[in-house]
Length: 160
Image (tube, rainbow, N blue to C red; front, side):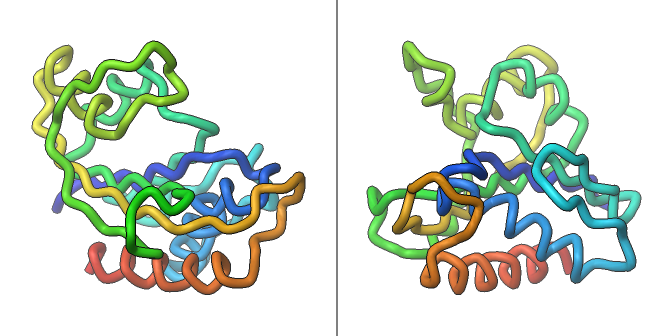
């Protein structure tokens, strides 16, 4: 049985930028009778022995050690329209992409670090949801809320 990490990231206090936390919560709720976090400051309970949830504000190099312990990582994030699809689904390959800022670290770079530093064969997938409003709120915009439900359904399909 594959060990899967569902890794959501973004700022939950900036409306749609925090969509991944809402998606992780929906997936966890559907998987089983789990205590669900009331806020992003609380950790998710592991739903099954092979599925783990992780939420953070951004991708950072120190997470390479953690993701190296998984067979597959599903990264979940918001996008601002840089990709044409409202719900973007992409298979990732480990590839270092340099950036002067850790805030701009890509999932591909994190997979590359896990591979280079720890010999991990972790595969990755990115589910990216279009955000429309980025004000100071914990509530999603109506369209992003709809897309979050679609993204959760897609992730559940991958977990089957």
